[in-house]
Amino acid sequence: MSDPAVEAQRHAMAPDEVPPPAGSNRRIIPIWTDGPLALFAGSVGAVLLGRTLHEWVAFACTLLLWSFCNHVLLTVAVGGSIGKLIGGLRLIRTADLRKPTFRQAVRRWLWGFFHILISPFLMLTGTDLDHLDMAGLRIVRRADLRRRD
Figure 1 (spheres, rainbow, N blue to C red):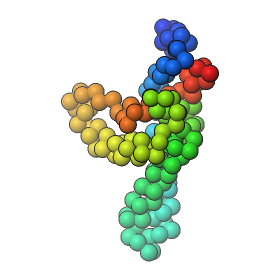
Figure 2 (cartoon, one colour):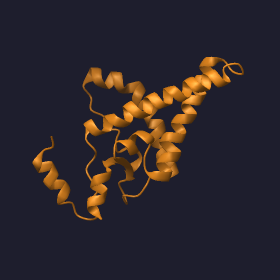
Figure 3 (cartoon, rainbow, N blue to C red):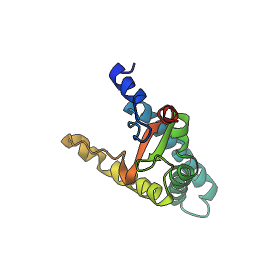
């Protein structure tokens, strides 16, 4: 159920205004889609390359390669990872509302690994570190982008 005030704000956006960030309920979809896909890709890589490389090395390399392709290359090409596209989300540049550049997507991808490492500390201390606008990018609902046109 959405808040009527938030909905009114979304409908009243000026054409050059950046859409609001997608809500946390919507952002959970990419986590539970992209994560298992990366683990599956790593497992397949470990099976296929396990005789050539050590299984854990093959797993880690394949997982990272999949993650890079999904979160950087696919995002630059179409505006989001598989999970974001399934969830009706897009990653946009806050400066001009277009798809991220390669450099921005790489910065955000690398920041994601750091954020995973520090998340337990942030939760224990109650610190709120909003990483969603990292590298000048924001996750928004695709519907909010359409309303602007």
